[in-house]
Image (cartoon, rainbow over all chains, first blue to last red; front, side, top):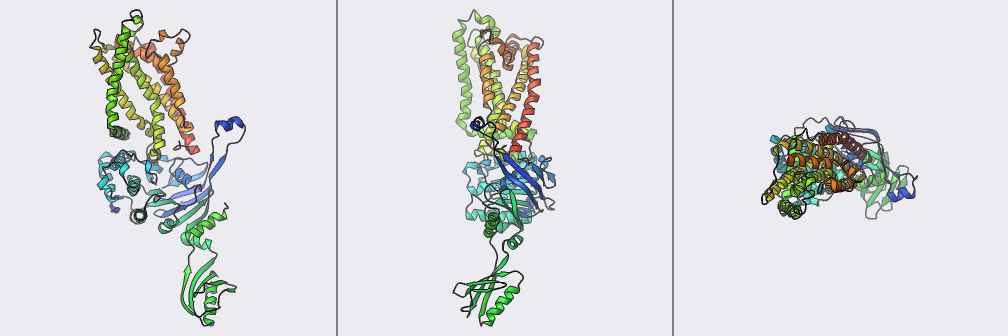
Length: 339
Length: 274
């Protein structure tokens, strides 16, 4: 995407600040329930409970969590579609509670819902309609839409009915629509959900390369796709059962997830060495010259282990530290909160 | 705001014409409807010498034509907001519009704009085709230009009151996900009691006062007297005052209910649910 020229936004000043955000939904009772139990209490579902997070200007922030964790509720509050019960949220310095229009002028929402377009209109007609809603002057509208269609490689089919577009094209249309008014903040809700691997890769390149690095957009990415979050996000928050369970850079979250460091050591002539236990950790062997060590942090345990191996006449071919995968971190964070 | 309103009109026109046969058939539908009323009225007119005194202008076809026209407009005003809101909810486009920097009321009014424009056009067509049909008879319909300002005022007041109720229906859809009960009740009562197809004097005496509770009664009566008998604003003061009262009461109530529903739906998180 030749996107740098599309954005007027070169000095990012935006960020998202969420403080002690809480939202509980009251499930409406059916007529039958109301008649059978007139004094019964309506069921309450806590979607968010004291959520705090801050997204710095120009970063890609991942919002991870299982279904029902509260991700969509958070995005909807940040889009002014839902009013919170408690707490505050600001987007690009504007309050979601009192500055609705300013917040909406500052955001673009990329949804994976293909039905959010008018299927009988062409891609261009769809963009023209939404451009008007985004306060783009008629004189600039056509040029802006054409530029986005070109940039997202949709020009060839721009005048075809939206209903005939492929999933990849529909998703690129969603990105084009979100960029119409060149907002500094983008929300992306499962943007690659319905895409094939190639289209998903192209979209990830677009997000990281053009939108984030070149245009400096702040991106809040809600996803189930942990590999995607790992590839794109500088920081993540794991949301589960209405609360943020862990938040930080991937390195910070990994440090939390693993109290011990993991090493994969390839050796020769160390028969009978493992299993090996010592104060600094444990070592297991797979019988093919590969040792798996779990060691205390700090490096002393590794020094001790390597010394012990050398003392037994082993030759060390390689030693690699293994990172915790995001899946492990996610499982741990979600498991910690209980089922 | 005008640019956005234009955007809604263009969008809905393009969607409408994309269903080509449906779009064309609507115009034939107008001709067929007018034809049905024309022959129905022609058949009955000869047997109505006694009753023609209670028909404004003494012309059954004109009576029906100028009863159905405001009734259609009322129908659209009552139902289009709730219908369009619901449609956008169900098709999934509502959320996409609501995250744009455009106020929710404008989204809802804008979505209904095409229906108003098209209904206006259809009503003009009804009247033009109706007058053309009447020229094949010995008693062509004569429109009295002197009554045009009064008819226009009455029509505007009917639209204002109906829109107020329509906005309430949209508020019901927004909050309770159903709003057609209110619309169905008022529509049915208007058709039966509002003097649309027959004079209210044909109703049983005990029911007749109920017709005075409906804005459409004042409208059908007023529009006919203005256009078919040439009565001016002065002569239709009572009808205009009654409609003005409906508008003054219903408009703020409608807007207040809408605002409450919007806030409630945002609070409950059900704005885009259906």
